[in-house]
Image 1: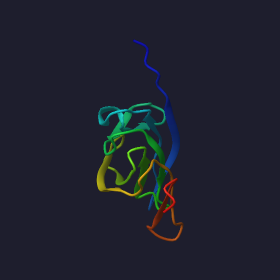
Image 2: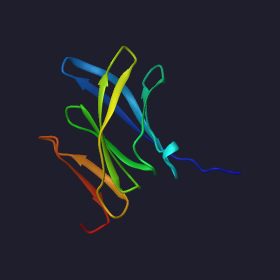
Image 3: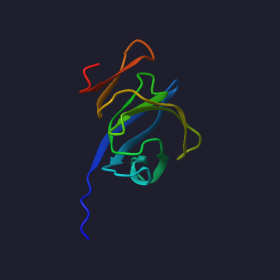
Image 4: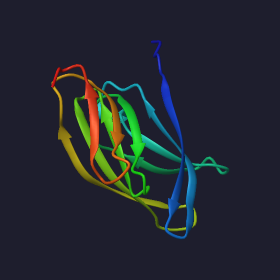
Length: 129
């Protein structure tokens, strides 16, 4: 059996109120089920996986941190968006919590972006809504 696999990488620098929280990379796989539709957070340097965020059932198509780096917005082929809080809990440890998950469109959500002046965001799909 041959499996085709693709991966999306997002470089991130998370800043806290008193400087950098961490440098990391987010990754997501092409997924046909929830068991592989996770978002992985990797520590730059050690390349240690420091978080596996689970919310979606199909491929995550885009992710973006809020401008204060307190939240991560992710959108997916499953037509849902999810919002996570991300915090440093130790030297090489990151805590996260799913705040919200909601179906937002009738077709695949391809894009997302935070408002630069607050915690509002927009999602993009081909649903003509």
